[in-house]
Length: 214
Image (cartoon, rainbow, N blue to C red; front, top):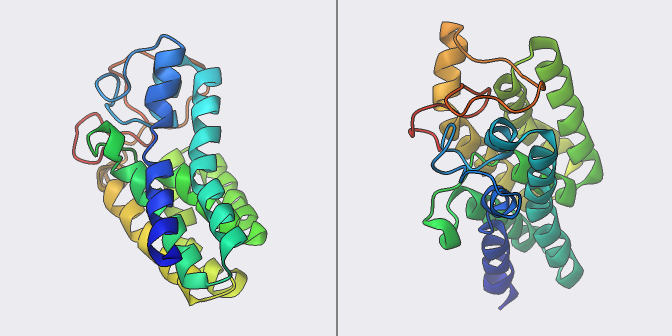
């Protein structure tokens, strides 16, 4: 029963769109139809500034972390725990409560990694800071972090269930970032901008202006 219920609970928790809810509470435009159209912290930063983006980011991370911690409370089966984390991640990408149109999943994946292993999560944060900080490309930091996450999981996570879930998340993150990869290749990707709210039609490090990777 836990094999089904815990991943389902993870998916439902992940399906709660932090970006949409925060935007509604703070009186901002709907991130699904404004800016890049991507319901994530980067687009909320563009539409509402640093505070709204920070709140969105925190809740997106918690969406990944909390279901894993709940699963670990009820079982020590790594496959069930891994599937629960993966369920939360997929809920963010394909939220049942918001028309299955979600974000790219990096923050939620980070929360899942922290739930799997504190050291795994911390390692991912350090890698993102190093690469995003040095390049000023948030998308590059995300891609390198998730690309290395399965390697880190093979050393820092306690079982195959965690490793497989991490690998699947990495694959989805790369698929969701395919437009960013193209722009990085063409050197047209936008760099990190912490200067506050930007025009709604501005480009973003992680959110393409078209709908191909929402």
